[in-house]
Image 1 (cartoon, rainbow, N blue to C red):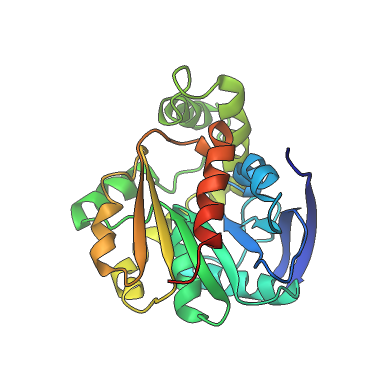
Image 2 (image 1 turned 90 degrees about the horizontal axis):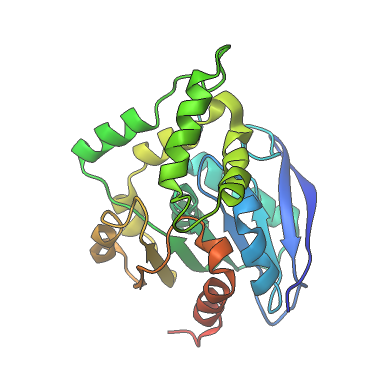
Length: 272
C-alpha cells in the first residue's frame, strides 16, 4: 500500500519554495522533511515518500535554485540553505521539532539546520555525510566544475549524460528510463548546477558535528561517498552508522519500501 504524493508551494522571504507532500499530519508523529542532493530536486524522494507517507506526513522541498524553487542570491552557503529550511518549517506551521532527512548536500543542510535551530529538529537521517581531505576536495571541485552545461553544440550536455549513465550504474542497477528521470531533475538548476556543490565543499562538517546533539542515523550506501562517510562518525555526538552496501544511487526508487522501513524504525524508536 502506498499514498499519493502531491505538490505545492510555500512563500518564504526570498521567494517561493516548491514542495512534494504525502501522508497526513498526526500530532503524535512528527513530520519528516526531506532534503535532496545537489543538483537535483525533491523528485528523488517521490517513491520513498509514497511508502513512508503511510505512517507520517512527509515533505520533500526543492532546494532554492533547483527543481521549481526560486533561487537565493549568488552564491549561497550551506547555512543559507538551512535558514530557508527553517523558514519553510515555520511557514507551513509544522509542529516543531520535526524530523529531517538529507541526501549528500542535503545531509550537510540537515546537520547545519540542527546546529542553527536545535529547537526545530528532533532526529536526523543522513544519506552519506562525507568528510573530505584537501586533496579529495581538489578532485571533486574539478569534477563538478562551473562550466556551462548548455552550449550551442550540446557537447557538454552529452558529456554529462554519458558520465551520469556510469555514475548511476545504468544497465546493472538502474534503467535508462530511471536515469533519465533523475538526470532531468539534475538539469533543473540550469547554470546554477554547481552552486550546491560549491557550498558543500566549503562546509566545515567537523565543526558542525561537534555542536549537534540530536540523534542521527547515517546511511552509508555503495556510492561515490562511501569511503568518505565513516570518517565523520568519531566527530558526531549521537549517531549510528548503517552500512547499506547493497544500495547505491537510486535506492530510494529501487529499494523504496526497505528504505522507508529503515527510516521509520529509527524515527519511531524510543528516545535514547
